[in-house]
Image 1 (cartoon, rainbow, N blue to C red):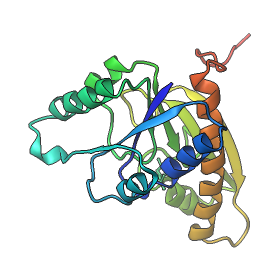
Image 2 (image 1 turned 30 degrees about the vertical axis):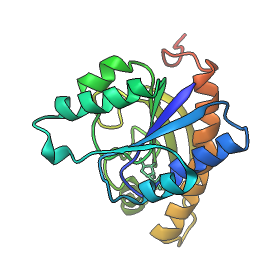
Image 3 (image 1 turned 180 degrees about the vertical axis):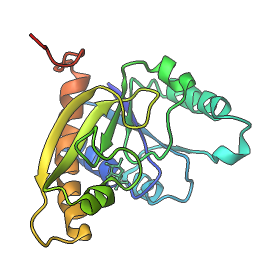
Image 4 (image 1 turned 60 degrees about the vertical axis):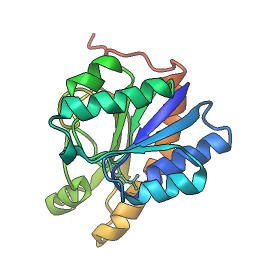
Length: 197
Ligand code: GRF
C-alpha cells in the first residue's frame, strides 16, 4: 500500500513512520508528504529523506473544496491508498473524506474522547489527570471524533512538567503509530466498534 502523510508541523511522527518503513517494520511505501504549511519543519525532514512533497497555501484558494480537489489530484497521481494524518492542523472536508472513506487515520495525544482539539497535552496537564495517553482513530468529519482503533495509556508522574510529559507521549506515538498502521493497512483490525453483548 502507498501512504501519504499529511502534516503541518515538526514531522516527528512522519519521520518515525518513514524510518519504520526503512526498517521493514511497516510493509508500505511512503510516497508523499502533503502540507498546508510550506515552511513547516516536516518539509525539511521529507526533503532529507527523499520523500516527495506537495505543499499548498490554503488562503490562496476560494474554499476547502478547491484546495482539497488539488490535493486529491496529487494523491491520485501518486496512487495513494491511505492518508495518514500526523499533526495536520485542519479538519478534513467532504471532498477527501468521500474519496478516501475509511482510509484516513489520525493520531491524537490524549485518550479520546478526553481532550480533543488543540494542545491536548496542555489540557490534560491543566486538568490534573493521573493518566493520559495516545489515540489512533479513523477520521470522520468531526474534530478527533472518528472510530477509535488503538490507545495506549501514559501515567502522569507526580511533579512531572509539561515538557517531559510531552516527550513521554511522543515516544509512545513514534512506536504506536507505525505498529498500528502496519496492522490497519493489512486488514488486521475489524471496524465497527466494540461488541456490547
Ligand atoms: C502529535 O502529537 C500528534 O499526536 C498531533 O500532532 C502532533 C504532531 O507532532 N496530532 P509531529 O509534527 O509529528 O512532531
